[in-house]
Length: 614
Ligand code: ADP
Image 1: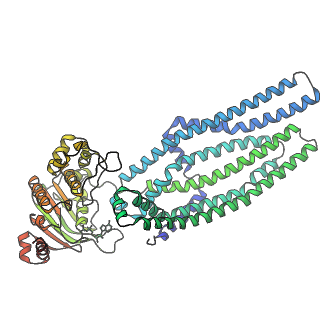
Image 2: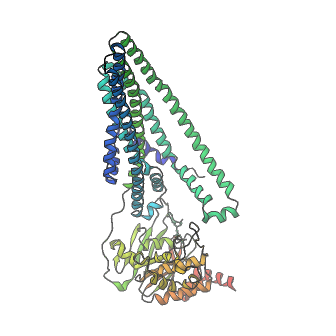
Image 3: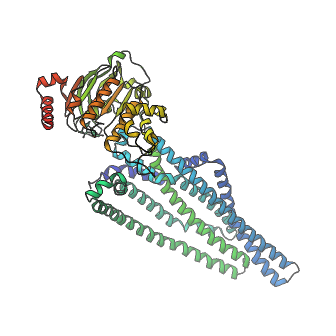
């Protein structure tokens, strides 16, 4: 595996953690907001139950003290009715305990319901954002990292953050109520209670930060692991993985990544827990110090036996509330860091919508490239350089060139998936950048060589070409006829209603050539599109079928623009204009006859292929 650019992530981490350290509550507000807008009734229920669950323990401790004192009193005085009073108090405590249990249940019910709603909402937000992104962002590995991280972790974090915030509030309410009772014994006791938990908290915060940094740095490895899982376990790769015997090799890689990550995890876990134990001892020490102190005070007769039980209980429970609050804060710190990746992703700037024009001043002009150059982000050399060309409506253009010469890139520029680094592209005499996105998309029907094979119904695969008619059966058929798909579709068990793909029960698989016919039909769904682009979609068909489709395509596209990328000269020669691209430059252009006459690169390739057929 190539060494991934871990270092790239580092600077961002250190600032992220620093900001995070001081901003334990930074995202709490936003998380709360998210939860609040997801379900108000549940949030209110959660808040009320939190307060209730917060005050009850102190009330229980208080009643407990009353019971002990009442018992002691009754034993000493045997006054009439004293037993009854004791029983009443016991019943009251029982009632309070029952209410506590009810509050806890209620809390967990609200939590479960919110978790489901919130998980769905955050995932939908992530996907919604994905729809607004540029192709270049999807192809950018660092950005892809962000997306993966957001999807993997962050969808469960908002609720976790809110729950911890509420948990913190609950413990704080408890602590205040404990404190009010305990301060009567001694303000020092309250101070000891609070301070003893501090060291453990600091350690917790530090290790949470470490864990998060670890998670970030190794996100390329995690991504590779995820990818390997996909390759090994998915049907579309299974064929090659089996035949090439790749399985064990890939699995080995998968294991190696795990071992490397596991080692780091183990080290961190061990360090975290050793420190946690050591510092936790301070708390125990404080508890038993206070125990002794309270016991001695009771012996001295300054407090009653009932008070002693109460203070001990307060101290013990107070301490667990302190450590729960502190670990909640540690957890919140961690949630915040993770949430920061979610918001980092959600706030990725997207390009503002470009132009708003839906028409050009010279519809008869067609498409023009004027000195267009383009370099992919992070590439060191341009994929296209100084491309100038002109296609009028009614004309067809074929692009010829070796793999990697820049043909697909040219189409990506024409469809505005990418933008020229210099030069400009005009449609109907108007710069492409000035066109309204939707208007432009309607004009162009394109099928890329790696067109998508949706595991949906056959008809929907065709309908995908025009979302307005995604489910329109009549149009599926019409487009299917044009793409020459209908004859084989009719042989499928449910025709256009047949489910495709192995993910689903009874999903059918199609051959490469059949898929291409579906893809062609998809292109023909855009009945209003007057620019049709075929980027090698017919490679899996035989030469005869390809020529027939192109012929068909040209008839359908009279007065339209047809652009074809193909390695088959039998088809290419039918185009009005042929452009030969090499290393991002146009090296020859003209009709088939002109280029043959020129006797250059095109003629050479043509003869080479012709020889193969002879
Ligand atoms: P063709 O369609 O002629 O086979 P392409 O237009 O796909 O060639 O590719 C032209 C050049 O641009 C190649 O050198 C390729 O490596 C590079 N390239 C293609 N896509 C990308 C991308 N998304 N990011 C960076 N470089 C790319």
